[in-house]
Amino acid sequence: GAGVSQSPSNKVTEKGKDVELRCDPISGHTALYWYRQSLGQGLEFLIYFQGNSAPDKSGLPSDRFSAERTGGSVSTLTIQRTQQEDSAVYLCASSLGLAFEQFFGPGTRLTVL
Amino acid sequence: AQSVTQLGSHVSVSEGALVLLRCNYSSSVPPYLFWYVQYPNQGLQLLLKYTSAATLVKGINGFEAEFKKSETSFHLTKPSAHMSDAAEYFCAVSPLQGAQKLVFGQGTRLTINP
Image 1 (cartoon, chains in turn blue, yellow):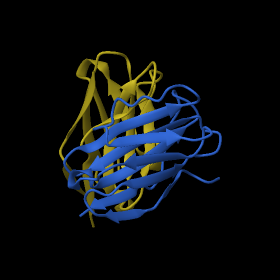
Image 2 (spheres, rainbow over the protein chains, first blue to last red):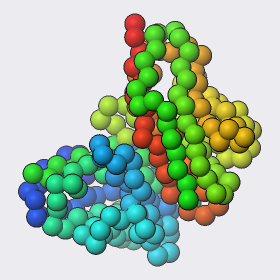
Image 3 (spheres, rainbow over the protein chains, first blue to last red):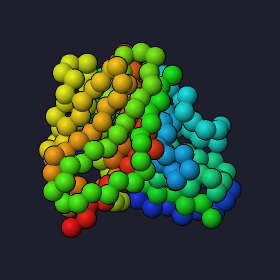
Image 4 (cartoon, rainbow over the protein chains, first blue to last red):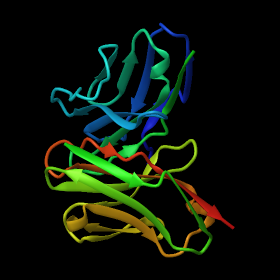
């Protein structure tokens, strides 16, 4: 079956622009996670969604970062007024629930010039 | 709070040799522990996980790991390295109860020499 997909695979933007990154989880997975992978910070948790519960935003690095999940499926991570330190690979994962294995997508490589 | 330390950012072994990647964790609650592998330009793939059942966990591709509570360790091993094992390996921890927000180690890049 189809795995987690993310788009775009690569995004180059200019400092100060807004970007949207998309994640399509595996069908039927109720939990969705965003992580960031950067040279300086390694792999960091950003946010997760579980069903209809309020998302856990505790990992978002600043208020320029936000995410939503529509209809319990597709999620969009938005970064406003991008900065060079936002350059990283943004990984999405989904799971059947909070106690189940997380399946990762291939990531979106974001480069802020 | 939870944290993971992977000893050695880069490990190099010969093909056919033992692979040992070290992971130590810190957790104030009973943990789940994971090893993930990342091949170039790909996402993370789960190798194995510890969920408080057997302390010796067998995973895919011949890898296994042993949970040692007294040493707070979860080292990854494979008896005989193959060229296809070259990748980056991440150890991760999450709380046994509640949301499984993974906390990752810094990763270990494994190189296999012919």
